[in-house]
Image (cartoon, rainbow, N blue to C red):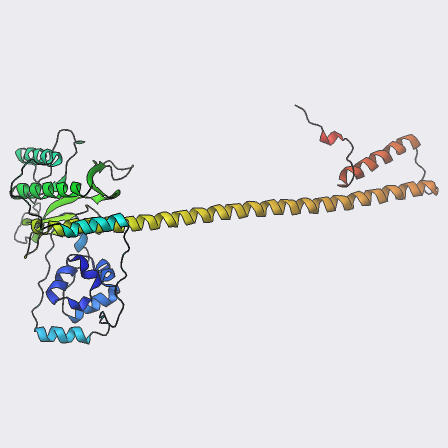
Length: 400
């Protein structure tokens, strides 16, 4: 798919080109590139009689399978043009807004300019002074071939005694080993000229997998860089043995460069009926650089959102702390007012007792003990009164 297609109207494409793109990129992602909705793209495909991948198609590709795809039906070009024009949601450059332009950073724009200025890169048919990773991978593939380490479809993976040996992610048949190594050798060398590099890291801290081969360009890490050969699964209903597989695996010879396993792998390049990946290395480099720019935008957006969430959480925690302090002050104020009322009530009660004694309505049996009682009562009123000095009390004592 051409990188500039996102800026074109979907109806600028021929039926054949749109058919190829629909089978190269998930429709949800392709719709975003054209600046239209998923349902609009589906409607265009129906109007133009373009078949679409069924559910599970992309998952099968992820695991190296090549599900059969229906051919593009043949219809008259006049009918196709009329159908395209009759589509209600047809978007043209004059009538509808195009997809928003991605604003890359200056260093990414410089890399894109360098890639645009490159002459057409020719992939050699033989390895000359191969990159060390290519040499290691070739050894692993040769060893796998020697050990007959092919899978059910005839695909080879690099094999090593030490599983921690760093090697490229290549899985191809025997006839495509040389071709795959030459392509990856040229790609890595061109990436290094642009300041990129290959690193190896474990997918995540909980993974038991070997380290993945990843690309770093302009300081941004992409996903795994994987070159694999596709194969088809064809049902075989003639087998009568209940233990035998009812599926035949047929190699296609087509190579695919993507970013590794995942529900929606990103395809950088693949063989088509019209061209092979060796002929589109310039396109691959451009797509890798653009992917880096998009990855950086997503990373920065995520960091900004994370920073905003952290600032919001800090502000929320600070507000909660201030509110708790305010509630504590209010509770203390209410307790002090309540204690003051209790102290005033005690003093009034004590005064009433003293008035009763003075008027002879009350006669304590033991005047000395009663006087001590009244002093103790006044002390309790002072202890409750937040406006008076609190006398010592046994309630304030503690044992160390």
